[in-house]
Image 1: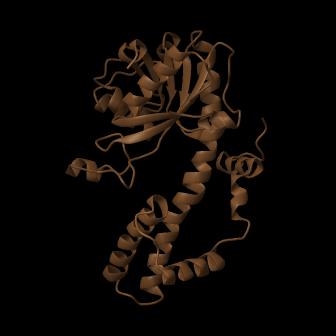
Image 2 (image 1 turned 180 degrees about the vertical axis):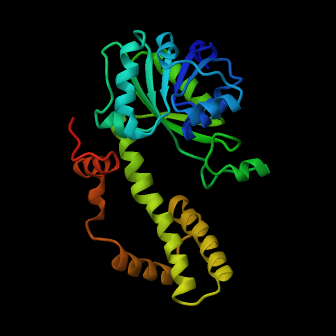
Image 3 (image 1 turned 90 degrees about the vertical axis):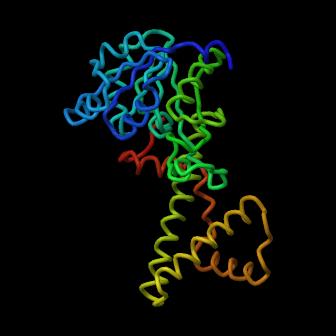
Length: 288
């Protein structure tokens, strides 16, 4: 660990009373870093104070911060960054927790303010969990270790180390921090993990409902069969643990023919990424 990662960093959390703001703040509380918590909504302020943290006005919180974390919804990032960035000190890092707004160019920028993004990978399905707390922590940031993917628009090693130090704290416990470009992070989230993985997870739930409601299979039997085979399917497909049987491969081909479009891989193209991000951000189109 470098000296930058060990030293105390001045951090401002904007939106400290929201869902992600509370998660981020919980892990920062008690850390070596100097943290100011900002929240404008009365309900959010009540949550922050109930957690034993003091409220600092936004303009005061950001002025001396080395890292300003925008823990606000994507749709609010443009307006909030317009309020925050002009008040930040030169050389400070503006950290968002999702790449969509940064990639779409919705954030207010300054030549002397560094843009950073960091998104949690969440605990792996293949994580070796040892405690009840780790089993219960499916989201991450509490007990189960997870990786983080981050991006920073700076070649300064100290700035990168500072960002990593903050990221390792807010998403703790963290195994590895993988650095990519902002565009690559946007290609991972949403395309790889939301457009595909989360959609498949929701599709599995729909399939379970069909097995129960349409085919009449008892729910406990259908759920047990699906959960076990989902684990096997992911282990075989992603790790190559065991080969699929010949009969299973035939059924898998039938599934592809029946469910997937032939051109489904087009979602990895830049114009498709722009299209889904525009929909997510409620924009007519992405303009960069």
